[in-house]
Length: 177
Image 1 (cartoon, rainbow, N blue to C red):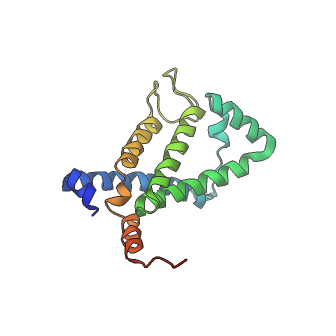
Image 2 (image 1 turned 45 degrees about the horizontal axis):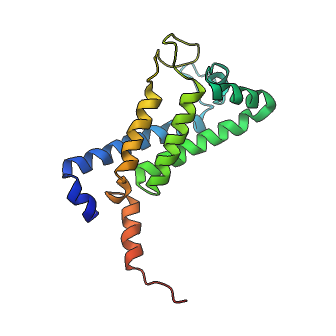
């Protein structure tokens, strides 16, 4: 473990932030993976439709939701779907493996912020196609705050491939000019 971080954080704190990073990474990766796997089969043996962001965007109430609805109606739905799927998978792998962790945290915060402003939870009543009944604070905002904690503690320096790459980089000889 990185000596400066080791001196500031107890072992329990270090394990806690790495577990949090891994769980959030798993959440992102699984969301992307699940969306990538569809079409799938229902329990009755019928084929399910390919995942699409269309129902989420059509029910979006936030200021960015209106812009994304215009993009969806202009035929950009497939592009939006592909970007969401692969961004979720890339962020998830980054956080789970601890590789390019700071960049993964930036991506996670950006995506969660986008999801938040797409469907602002301002009225506290259920909306068709939206999960839960929230008033201002929803799961996207909470997860974004958790990712900000991961970013601020530079968890890639505590454990993960970032730490291994940093150690390797220090040992590799510098090229001559």
